[in-house]
Image (cartoon, one colour):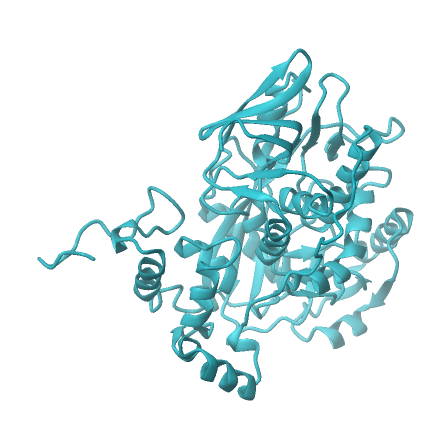
Length: 496
């Protein structure tokens, strides 16, 4: 495939790159989507709070504010077309004490300035009635009715899968190295898997978006600083939180929240620790203590005895000033076609609310290309619908019975905690974007995320992957090359 000429190459298959690929797949374009990791969505998109923000938090006049509100409004239609889980439950900014209660009105006014509909300030009694586990010292809350929760990886896989079905070429394990230039025009990219030529390149490299734009000689002062956020996950059988609960935000962070998820677990976090290493997802005792103290301030009845997992994610925080000169803010999104080079759509600093903003960013990319003179002709056969595969645990008993009668593998439960069957695993291995690692299966099915954290299912999943991929079990990995589960057989029998 080296030296093939594409119309558009998209660097990075996180939620933004996947959304851009999906929206551009509507047009008669030859598109390549590349991802350096072994699967899509393994960066910031795979470890976050899974919230679709209403849009009251970003500073008015910024791209963050605009993209957040527009993107939020797109999620109902997208969830219907792409068949990912999305629930518009609303969210609460919870005030503890009268001093914090006084800050809710200014937050509501900021939301109104951003164009956020449906915000109501509730008194303490209303909040206690809606969330019985809340701190009894609650003085009130800002309720934003348009807030929502989703499965963030489900959003990524649905968007990318729809793009692939509509003709986009996806290449994983493909790392960007440099641009190929003809004067000031970008005509292609160099990767670890060869050179690929194109008329346009979209930089959606997330944590590495600064490196990509610097290779083009752009914004030498722009820097991505990873902001680590740590989390606890709780057993859904032991703790039930009904709502998304934010604290009153600080000048630097939305704060440590307590939230439910579309999978029924309660999670708490994140903190916001600026670090240097763009791959450091380690958890720390100090960080976990910090999020615990913040969480019990909202919900005192939380108990660490019911924690089943801890994890950390990285947000690609940038230092770009707001494009609006009237707004003094230096951590805005970059969404541009720069004048210094030709053939580049440059995206950077897409931290929170990046998930919420992703479809709006994709639409803006389409608009930028049209504005640059690109004649985008729609495909007559473009299909906006991504058909979801069966989820056994969500089916009625009669539906489960019919599914098993059609395919016996759906009757073999591999993950007991989350009730995931062999049929579901096999379907993901042979999906339009095949799941080829344990973590890829985990992200798509939620297998291994329950109380036993994969203790029961892992050897069975390794066996199924080896069988379906036609490889030795020694080649099966957790998350790509270098993370193999097995090193040798324990018996003399040759591994098949």
